[in-house]
Image (cartoon, rainbow, N blue to C red; front, side, top):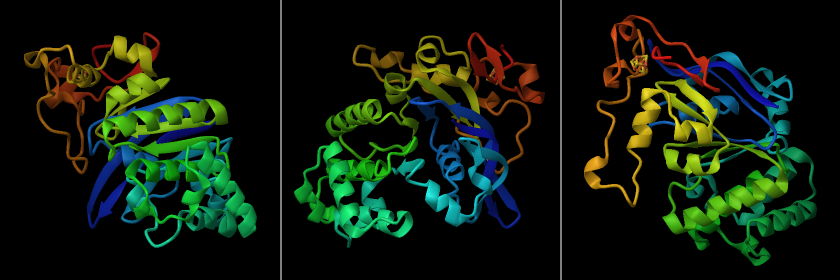
Length: 313
Ligand code: SF4
């Protein structure tokens, strides 16, 4: 239903190009919970912005396709994209305070998109806003509030309700609970799961918190240096990670029962994506690296029921 095919995107700074998304492909089926995880700076957010046609200059998509029900979103005019956004595909952003307009009442900013882009009358728009706010547990009297009058958790729920306004088929969520405390985070994630079951949408969930994905996602992609290095069913990736980077991320996960001296971190730092990469992009941080890794870039291969890019397989 939703498919990204060989997407390449990045940022042009004079004669320096930061190649943030490198040849990424994936498919999201009906009602999938597709998670993308990786360290900060690995290209996750650029992948999301490029997929939604929201990458602004100096960002640009170099090549690839983003197919929604067979239509390539990257080939559409902005006016056509506006018709598809919210209706078929929408977005929940990272920090609700930054995505809500501080000087507009909740009801007006939510209704705005319906009136301006989808031909709703103001009254019909307010009715729909009321209905969607109820879905996320916000009472209609809060429609009159300004964002600063709501708690962080409520603001995030408003942003989720906004993404649900026109019952899209696919919702991108970019670290939607990062700025919240763990208790609120838990309740919002539970609500997202319940809404997904009720409204039957698919989720592409982007986060650096891989533990969240192992709990929630059906499929998971591990991203490193702009590429997917492992992709498969979340449960099997967790129980039997293949790529050394995935193994490192799992070994670094905190656990209540684990002794502090058993934690391992991945040595080194993420790659500078402006550099030309030769060999395996992970080789300087990989304890399994061998000669071939220096000279030959591993391609994604289907191994044991999942995709992995590593010369060990
Ligand atoms: Fe490590 Fe080599 Fe596999 Fe890259 S290809 S992850 S360097 S073993």
